[in-house]
Amino acid sequence: MKVAALVPAAGQGERMARALRLLEGERDRPPLAGKLFLELDGRPILRWTLEGLLASHAVEGAWVAAAPAWEAQVRAEVERWGLRNVRVLAGGATRQASVWRLMEALPGEVEWVVVHDGARPLVDPTLVDRVLAAALRDGAAVCALPVHETVKRVGASGLVEGTVEREGLWTIQTPQAFRRTLLAEAHQAAERAGVVATDDAALVERLGHPVRAVPGSPRNVKITTPEDLDAAGRWLRPGGT
Ligand code: CTP
Ligand code: MG
Image 1 (cartoon, rainbow, N blue to C red):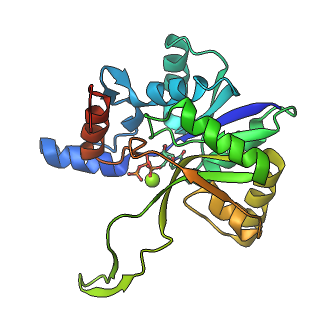
Image 2 (cartoon, rainbow, N blue to C red; image 1 turned 120 degrees about the horizontal axis):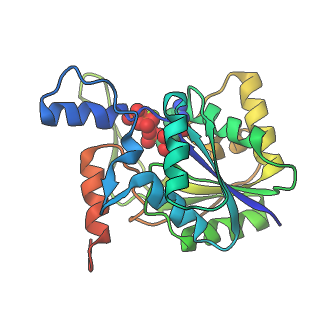
Image 3 (cartoon, rainbow, N blue to C red; image 1 turned 90 degrees about the vertical axis):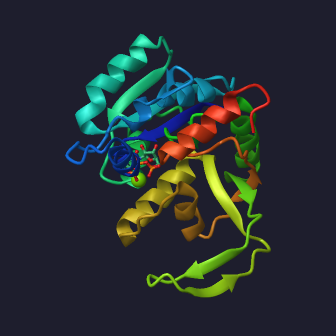
């Protein structure tokens, strides 16, 4: 069994850039392509992410998609962090395209892939091993959390259009794990159909293949805005909540 971590990290971090511009009143600043280099407790977000994934004994290496303009810098930083078995490639225009570029670059012996957002720094080996164990049984698995709040659909006008039955609703995180050949088939079918999804499991679901949901973690936040970075920082403090 050969397992590779695939890390889409080629986003523009536009929502973070917009929020920081607002906070700092710098209207003309270019988009912050370096969201993943913002620091969390003194370490860049991407470094947390990679160290969290590689801490799983099952993961033999990580393939990182970086924004083309940042590829060289990301490669240099990863080298400086002294992480073994990490390769950096140029990503694509969407998250899905970035993951596909990584899939295409994998050596033939890789049988299982764990896809994990570069923007989720608090991943840990427990999550990786849990989702991988489920994928080994079922072919595909995602980390997920049951929804605890009331969910409503709100129209563009800001008026509530209805309340969605919460029973059975889960929010989906990464890591997500797949048999490599299954994920490749799913990406190729989506490409042919012109489908673009926000996670990889959605592409596998389209094939009619089962996807197992296993418990994720509330700590495993995706860093989208400055508030998320604050929340991740609180989780890191002793007794953090
Ligand atoms: N991602 C990627 N390639 C893209 C777009 C996104 O690899 N073309 C990655 C991001 O780097 C991130 C993950 O997919 O690790 C989830 O995306 P998101 O949280 O939306 O990050 P950004 O796209 O960078 O942020 P924004 O949407 O605010 O620009
Ligand atoms: Mg995005």
